Length: 153
Image (cartoon, rainbow, N blue to C red; front, top):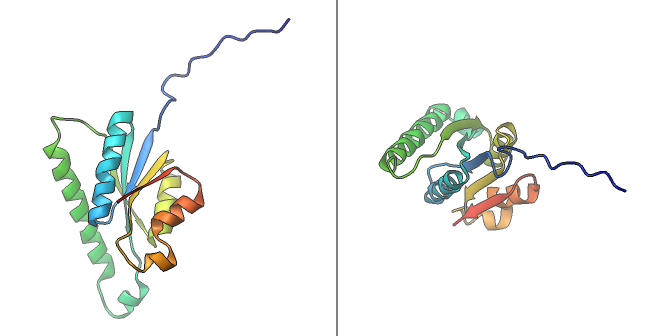
């Protein structure tokens, strides 16, 4: 005779809690953010939008105001996201946060996904022809195998 244990119901543990999207202002990253917003809405998950501010040592050596420029890009992205959220406010609600990290895109997104405990990562396809040879951020995230990754064209 075997002992039968009653099934325990787990409240709120099904489905993703955090869906992360990498944004950099490119058309493909904004499509990725829109796709991730739809996923977050349907799953009642938090949408974490992440911009990785590049660290360009060479630019700083030449006197370029790199930190100021990337900070302006981050502010511009937040404003664009707020405007888009206001446009669709009556149609659907999505809880979202905007985060900035510094470093190269892959390392920054990987760290963000780990820090935010992302259940899924959504990124846009690379718009650079050179990534066919070196490997894009999206491919590197997929190869890391630490999170489900969706690449949006």
